Length: 165
Image (cartoon, rainbow, N blue to C red; front, side):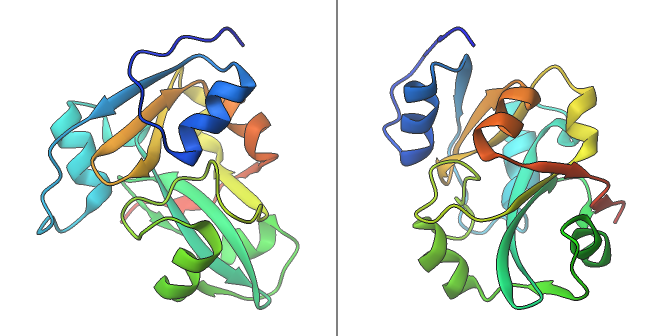
């Protein structure tokens, strides 16, 4: 994991990447607060394939908070998420609970550098890509990194948790 920083962002997510010595890139754009989908906005503004840009969602599996990371081009399959974590029931987390647990605001939640380390599942499609893009912990800023580095840093499981809209 060679280190290559191109821009200093200074979020908990980039601090995790810096400490780990991971090779990553920073991609910023002017965020439009009226955007219908933060993730699709990021892909469009950055000129990236939406299948390579991943959104971070918080859910509850059997009443415990968990993190799901899926492509912005699709949706989270809650049943598949529960199964990937050995649970029975999953539901989306309350946005306020997501913000409290992660320390980030909705629309800027990064899977990296959260206040509490939560169980995490990354959609398996990420593993077929040379680079994935996730929030850097601020609306309008993403980081690009190797999916294997993301899995390692998150201690994540991988599984088929995404589905087409």
